[in-house]
Length: 391
Image (tube, rainbow, N blue to C red):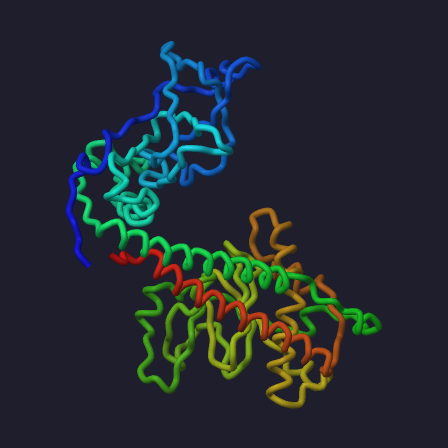
């Protein structure tokens, strides 16, 4: 594939900026029954939503006429979401499309459509310009930066092939996002406990015990207590929602709150407070932003948890049952932190013995989790392709 190099002015007319001094007062004053209204944009991340309008005869605070642009051009944000671009076609609803820009945006108009497709230009160069933007409190890209850029592009035929591929990728991404949203909604619904209505209630602290947090397990604390071998280690958990595994420390360390050889529930205490994760059997400790919960030894027999697999399934069930309760409790907290003492002493839950109904519920949620993971992995791969510089 042959690549051609062009200077800005080989492909485009001079970049035109929007008007300065267009405040809310002057926008409001332009609205009347006589003048045509046009959408107004600035340094937006997208210029698709038409939310602000002004009259075509509007003036700025210096008494200057606003500049009305027509379509068949690319709007580019110069401040704010600098580098973000939106192509605007010549017509909308069979009428010449008109719009206005403030000084945070400008337009790029192509000289010759035989050399570059405007949609290709957006796909190819939007991320490049976003990365070029410099920050001094607000991201900015200047007219000079854009007009001094060298554009390397293939011929129009190959650009159009690229666009067809990108449209397929966009549709796949849209479909996956829709599936992920539906799965997340299903997962977040409260567990229906119609089959468990007649069970007696029990305090949460009679079912679960917890492992206290460790202020000492900062990055420095972990570094000073690295494992002497890989056979006897403790996993240190954080309060992150992205990666809860913070590091490993030696299994024989003293004066650290930890659990050994247990299935556990990991609960974030700050930020996404109340978020629960189930973890397989292992050795665990936490830093200051999470708690570890595990089944009390004296309740296991009462709940008919006579096998390892049943203990595992039951903890997964408790994760599902408690998740919305924990989120709600954290949202009511004054500082949006996990209210451990209040929940452990005050929360009553059904005392439910192990049954096939519990197994069915956890199987359904496991399937949902697997589907979500699969969809998110596919979406990540698609986004990598989307962002990749194909040409």
